[in-house]
Amino acid sequence: MNLENVDRALDVAFSLDTIAILIIIAIAVFIVLIVVKFIKWLIGLFSYRNTSNEAYELSEDLQGGSHKYDVEANLDYALTSEGLLTKREQSFFHMLLPIAQKYNLYVAIKPRLADFIEVTLNRYAGGIESSGWHSSFNKIAQKHIDFLLCDLKTLKPLLAIELDDKTHLQDKVVERDEFVNNLYDKIRLSIARFEGYTKDEIEHAVLDAMVEAAMVSCENCDAQMKLRDGIHGYFVGCSSYPNCKRTLTIDSLLGEYYH
Ligand SMILES: [Zn+2]
Image (cartoon, rainbow, N blue to C red):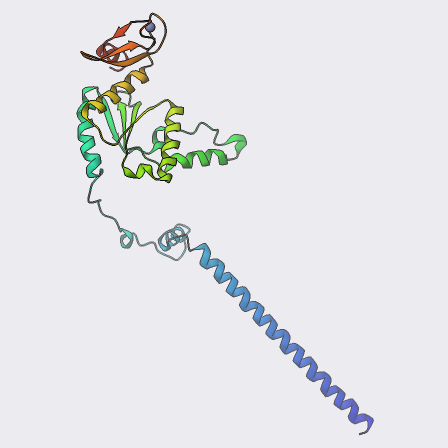
């Protein structure tokens, strides 16, 4: 083999190496592109997983996108078979209603807590929306009370009523009840919980709440006046009884503070 042949052989070997390297680089770039595409697809899959197609299409539509939100195709609704209240709630409501009417009260059915309770934190402290405000609001945004008795004239809430059933012994419900009880304590609204009940028990709770909300002080000793149950029926008496024996009739208290 002469020198010229060796040179040619080296040239051929060198160009074969270059081609092999170029092919490997091309394959590597191709694989990287496929992996990137796959990751993008995965991200897309997870980010839309929590959003319904309808909502996605609606938002696209609102943004002027190509998806058309089909209103008629998405009306998957019907009236509940029970109506507004369950059978159990209905029978309680029918016992409550005449009592409410007797004392000029309005019965709100299942209002949301956030409809009559507000968060006292400053929502936009320093121009930034407060996360504390949000977490407090979220605790009342999804909760409802079974019945809320309000003054018929002012619609000011006087008594919250919850019908308890067997579920109120479950841990999660106990936690919820505790939060709600503390909440009503804080906002100074009476709450009555009933599992079994009679007409008299409901009337007692209603009157008790009305006397509480009136916050009447005794004219003799300045102690708070409370609902009492005597042999002639309900009346209002000084809470420092027997030291102070001042009383008021229910009618005079209601007449002065409610109508
Ligand atoms: Zn007194």
